[in-house]
Amino acid sequence: MELELSHPYDAGIEQVPDGFLCETNILEKNAPLGSRNARVKELTRDDSCRV
Image (cartoon, rainbow, N blue to C red):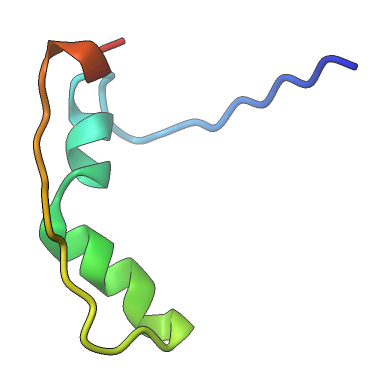
């Protein structure tokens, strides 16, 4: 079985990963799910995560 999914973003390819790696965005996305005292222990981006 093969599955393909496309999701349009209002940003360029270089800006999209930054949105996922922004600590503020991570905490804001988890708050409505009931996450309390959430923290990001490690947040790094290197060449291995570039498309």
